[in-house]
Figure 1 (tube, protein in one colour):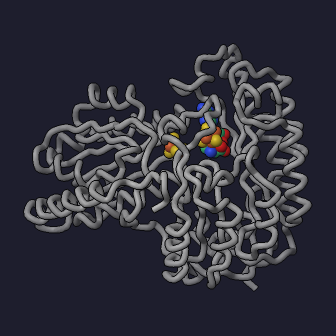
Figure 2: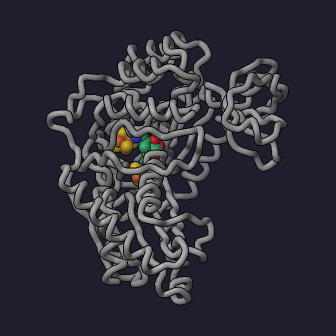
Figure 3: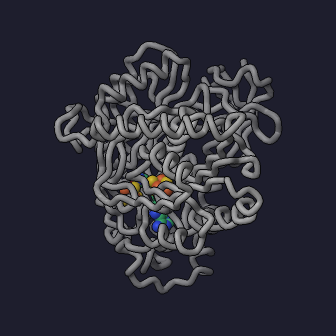
Length: 469
Ligand code: SAH
Ligand code: SF4
Ligand code: F3S
C-alpha cells in the first residue's frame, strides 16, 4: 500500500466480509430461489464502474439480476447529481416505486451515489419517500453488505452519508456489464472545484489508485479477453499526484500499452490545464492507445473561463489542440461545453462559437448550465432567461452539426480497424474506430467483441455506414 494512501483499513474490509456472509445466510433461508436485484446507474462512466462493483457485491451475496423492476426483490438506484435533469429523473423513478412497494412489502429500495451524498437530498428522500429503505453516500459504497444485512435483519430504515475526503475501496468484486469492454478507474474524486460543478462536493478529494493495482487489473482484463480498456478519472492528467504514486499518467499509459495482447486503451477525462506535451507524445507513440482525446473546454470566453475557475484561456486551449493535431495527425477530439453560465452574454457565447469553429471537434456534448446547490456559481447573478439560453444552445448544436458532417464526410472511402460492439436500432452492428467514430455495418452478432477492418461507404451527420473487408 502506498504511504499516505486512501485505502480502506483491512479491518473494515474484514467487517464487510462478515456482513456479506451474514446477509448471504439470511437470503438463503428467506428465499427459495435466488432473489432478484434491479440495479440502475445514472451519470458518468465512473458511476457505471461503481455500479459494476455494487452488482459484484450483490452477486456474491446471492442475488441475480433482472431488467424488470416489477420483478425485483431489491431495487438499487446509483444516482448522479451533475445537472438538475439527472436528479429530476431519479425523483420521478423513485416516486414510481411507491405503488410497487405497496404490492410487495418485502421489496427493498436502496439509493446511493452522488445525488444522495448531498445531505439536503438525503433528507428529502428520508422525509418525503418513506418507502425508501436505505440511503448511502459515495463514501459508503463498500458498506453495501452491512446495509443489506441490517435492512434484511431489522427492517429499519438507514441513512449513512459519511462526510470526509473519501476512500479507495480495493478488492471489491466486479460484475462487468460487457465481456469485451471494461472500465478501469485509476483515480477517484476531484480537486479542481470548477465553480459550476458538484462533483468535488459529492466525490471527495482527488485520490489515485496504486499503479501496481491498476496494472494488475489491466493484465487480468487482457487475459480474460477484454478488447477495450477505458481508464477513468475526473482529471486523468493529474494521476499520481495525490498521493504521490511515483507514476504520472503518461507513464501509466505506457506500461498498460506494454501489456501483451490485442486491445485498445481509452481514457477520460483530460483537463486542458493539466494536459501535457508528454501525454500527447505518449498517445502518438503508444500503438494501443486510441487516437481520441476527450478535452472539455466549457467556454470560449476568457472572462467566463475565469469565472468557472478552469485555469486556462481559450488561446491556450486552441494551442493545445493544435499541438495535439500536429503530433497525432489522425486524432479525433471531442469536448464538453456549457451554455448559459451565470453572467454569460451573447458576446461571450459568440466566443464559444469561434472556438468551436477553430477546434474541429468530431463531436461535442453541449449542456445548458444547471445551478447546483452549494457551488460558487449557484450564488452568482444569472440574468439571462431560459428561453434565451435555449436559443444559444440550438445555435451551437447547428454549428457543430455542420462541422461534424464535414468530419464524417472525410471518412468515406477510408478503412479503419474497429471494435464491433452493440447492435444498432437498424439491426446493424456498431463498430467503433480508434477515433471514436461509430460505423454501422451489416453483420451478424458473432462479430461482436472482435476487431475488424471496416471500409466506410457512406456518411450522415453523426453516423457512418460501412462494410467489413
Ligand atoms: N471532470 C470532467 C467533467 C465531469 S462532468 C471535466 O472536468 O471535464 C461532465 C460535464 O458536465 C462537464 O464537462 C460539464 O460540461 C458538464 N457539467 C458539469 N456541471 C454542470 C452544471 N452545473 N451545469 C451544466 N453542465 C455541467
Ligand atoms: Fe467538475 Fe471541474 Fe472536477 Fe471536472 S474538473 S469534475 S468539471 S470540478
Ligand atoms: Fe454524476 Fe457523480 Fe459522475 S455527479 S457525472 S455520477 S461523478
